[in-house]
Image 1: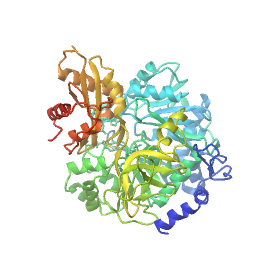
Image 2 (image 1 turned 60 degrees about the vertical axis):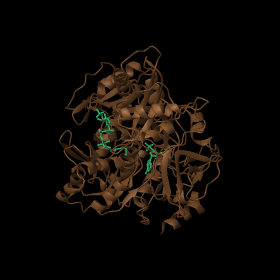
Image 3 (image 1 turned 120 degrees about the vertical axis):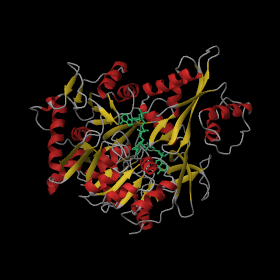
Image 4 (image 1 turned 45 degrees about the vertical axis):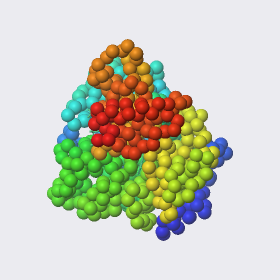
Length: 630
Ligand code: COA
Ligand code: AMP
């Protein structure tokens, strides 16, 4: 089938398309229909079906004779550990963990927060929740205690599962002290915490609250899979919005399993049994969808890699992995390839390895720059597919569906919309623009199965953030265009979100932290271009009158403040003091103009600017830190 025929088959009859796709997963009770639109614009899929996520990811493969196949390959250069877990072993381990959680009172609908590094136990914890119908919420390890506390208060977990520590090159990340710190700040307290002790740092357990991962499983009955409704939340994943309060993206069980299963063959072109590696982190959506659920639901072997593309030990790390595990499909963020390319521009280290198993490379999470794509194409000699998606959608909005038809690649474009997505480029009034014209990228409702049905505890915010701007559409927050052939081009965010090393961050959240510094009267944070990480945050500070502080001291303090409050992942290391911020006459800070100056791009002085001279002051402040017309 061609891509066009596939897309048309969905357009002609979306219900039949998604009911067909639903047959690939196991149901306790099949749904009576695909779409439930009685609460539109809140849509649900397969709502009256009954199923279990863990059954679909684990047990059914054991039943079907895949028990001896590796479900998980764990490779950790930072601890010198390698381990393989078969589907049969995974079933035993997850059933035992779920049994222990159940014995301590975790039931269907309870929230369980997971704060763990890239170890198999992180995926097992997710699957144990799915087994019980508990709703997991995984928090990325690079966030600080305060961010963890915000998520604890919003999700109100009955239990928190954490590791004693994580390992970043050159330092131990003290997960347990970070967790203790978060619980000191949070208003909500879990009934208990399960701590996975690692050899690299054994944590002190809080008597009466903390239990040891292994000890609390001793002697418990393993848990069976609990059937849940198709619209039962499988997980909440917090992502950056425009303020310090992250958005709790909800994922319903059935739609998520059906759509992810569909993508494995149709987009990634892998067959059950093949080794699939998403080099990301379980704390991000890529990790949820393509380290945990999709490969397992499809019967593939998934890879948990606790290391970096460079420095663990060198820029050949990815190639070693491909050779050692005969990886067929690799999915990562362009940043990882930029890091490798920077260390090994000629790709010399590739020559040391047999990369013949690799059939494709998929890139997402941020804009893939042409240099990186061409470098990967040239050196790997396999299709390099840029695809575009978001935490909210859970799978690709646009891609080249390699398992259906390898479309011609247009560098700079993540190709074409996938079935389920009617993508339109709209002007400010919500009218579609002509091909080649820039506009806001919106998707006609309903979104397909597996995409967010709402935000956790925040239905109004869901409506306001995504649905109100263009009635009848979901606003993606991205701006871009479509060409004559229907290829999409994703150019920029329309909100305060920036993308640093493939990590989505809110400049609004950073501004809230800067504004809390006692000497800061006013501030703004923008994203500036960076050759490695795509973007970096840069803060402008106006000090209180009479503060009389040394600039370097204050910038040092705010940098530390962002690291302490948001976390190292914010990569906030650039700040400058200015007398005033450029604003419109109505008081709106001209962040876009400042970003253009920082990136050395041409800009027009906005007609509405209050005082154009300020732009010269901004330029010289930026030049002091190496930006703005370098
Ligand atoms: N736990 C704790 N801290 C973490 C962390 C984690 N899981 N992940 C990152 N951090 C820390 C890093 O140690 C770094 O701290 P530092 O300021 O003390 O050096 C900081 O957060 C920023 O991390 P990052 O932006 O990732 O930079 P880096 O210099 O450590 O690594 C790359 C650069 C390119 C190697 C790395 O960003 C990378 O591999 N990116 C791939 C992109 C990716 O996986 N994206 C996920 C979405 S697909
Ligand atoms: P996240 O929710 O963290 O996955 O971030 C989603 C955002 O990352 C999108 O809204 C885009 O701004 C950006 N993004 C993801 N994939 C791509 C891509 N292939 N090209 C351009 N931008 C992308």
